[in-house]
Image (cartoon, rainbow, N blue to C red):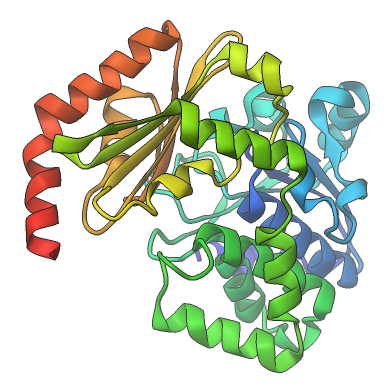
Length: 341
């Protein structure tokens, strides 16, 4: 970890610390933030977790979920907290633009900044950096950070439950981005006594009737298969948002359902927002959606899980994606299928 000794010296005495993560936080963003929150709080620091935007309701059961500030709803108070911070943690994001309206506030802060993240191409805005694209999740890296600190004996159920959530969600229940190192970490968590069955049930079996109806609509009415490219698209319009009263987190996991189709190697969820169109992409095998997101949709992420956004009309974005797949990646997608089968 870059400048680890310097950071460890700073953490040797109580500090005012702010933990941040990316807009539209997912399980890894929230899990790493709350895991770090519980760990640093136990060390005697004064901790505030601030998310740029609303958090997903399906994770509201997590301990101290209600203690997290949402910047867009508490702008004056959150700004005061950030300005008073001595250390700011940037968890699960590699670019300061990913915290949206908080970007300039954090960038201009004189606090010592720490990045812990597993996305590609980290920007240079932190003094201390733990960046590893081979890690399954930022939650895995927070666990490894606690190991580096020599504080494995400080781990407790609150810390481990939070970190396990991020590992579960970012690996899709251990279906991808796994490694021997990850399973050794998970084994130690289970030995400590966390309840895998309970946590898996809370994470993956938390659909409301509304969200289940929305999933059914996405599959039956919005799904388009590009057969000769082994690609699936779910496009959710503003009209769909109004019809189903879609809130943050309601579309969580939809893109993963597309990959359940046997021949599909590339899946995308395209959602029309008021001022922007967002894309969430997933893939199987060696096919990289990260390259597509970074090249065409101002985004990035991992080889098999990436996202992006673009300020163009909804239907035009769908056409752009189809053209990119057909013109640039058709041969790769079909060749990969033939090799893997």
